[in-house]
Image 1: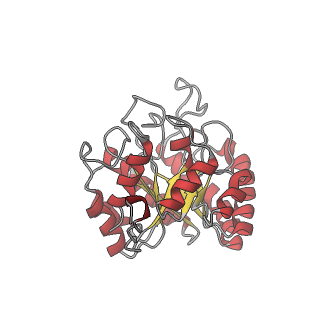
Image 2 (image 1 turned 180 degrees about the vertical axis):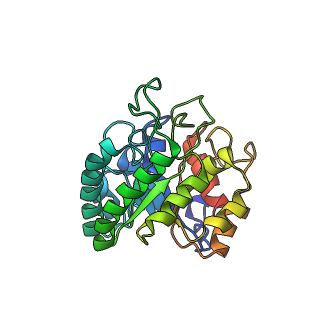
Image 3 (image 1 turned 90 degrees about the vertical axis):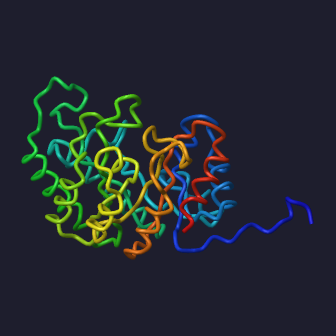
Length: 284
């Protein structure tokens, strides 16, 4: 038997893993949908995520799902969120349509964002939205969206993002008003819907707070989806970054998390080698 013929190691099966499409399509190798799906399937991942409905037929061809769908907002969707009521109608309409197609495809989640703290997200010199107003606005908007999400059986996952890394627009988001995990968690508690949950991004939580294992314990009832990346830098899950991924993922398993773990790191070297390493690190 040659090395190529050797059977692949069977994953332990405790963690459903997913590959974030944008990380491997927008940078570096620019893998197309077919290649990302082929590699994800080969690595025994269950999903390719953050990819639009136009590409879902390719996912289905490979027996994959989209663990979390984009919300359909144009541009950088994390800039225009529920903290700003002038965007509510558009977000609810666009996310509602995504909820509908997720329900038809039997895909579980759609992403949501708090938004940037300025009344004009593109202009940091515009008036700021107060924390109290942001909280109230998020609760009001998400409660409206929750009615549709509950009806369709789809979960909306609100993402916590870091504001500390200003080196790259996808490594950190200075101005994002949902950079405090407690703020995001309290919004979700106030909304009080089983279909509005937390997107616990391990990288972003590490950059803003650290204390990952205790943070998972504190928010375990709220977590609807999980993302990974090495900290600092949002690179590979290797020995050059500070998160002990096997321990953190094991904590998720121990608290009963059964959702998907999405590999959302930005490759800095051979992307396939990095993805294999990440998948192995999270197979606990």
